[in-house]
Image 1 (cartoon, helix red, strand yellow):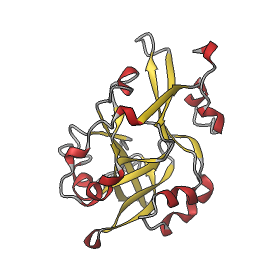
Image 2 (cartoon, one colour):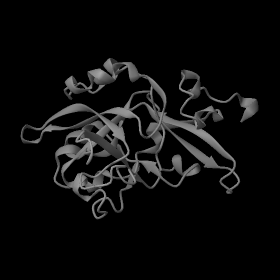
Image 3 (cartoon, one colour):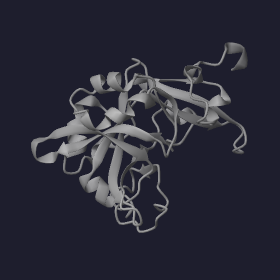
Length: 233
């Protein structure tokens, strides 16, 4: 599962890192970044195929938790934050989005919890990022859903997960699908880039133990990422 992320860059800095995508539609998110402890149901800048015919992409603002366009409930239904790569092409919640609305979620890292005793009651949080310190992009799917009562059009997305690489496997049995820069275009515009939904190379990544304050999204400060002192590890 992938349910927490961090974005340590400002919106302007993040857009500059992904300069191939038009940024006109996300200017209103400027004050929301950096986000040190990002959670589902919040809005994020994601990259979508803005003009598929010409292979052009652009940033949009979307809420984390997918609402398929056919959902009729005013609540928006289950709003899954993750989709498994093994079933994303066949699961009715994600099938249409996989075929036509694949996206990228730019982040600086994500969080995961290790179940230390196997009871689910004592979990150690970890921060996970690129060894280079650079931002990277998660594989996502997005939708536009019209609220049946208000008529408001709401953009939402979900993050695709896959089995873990050797590093993440030490703490968890899933990880988000990470798309390499060379594959951005094919992920968004290719007919069926299923082969890209695989574990990212562990040697390019790093992870470290952090404090339990990350457990609450209300704690949204840079020290969330501080490594635990050696005597507390």
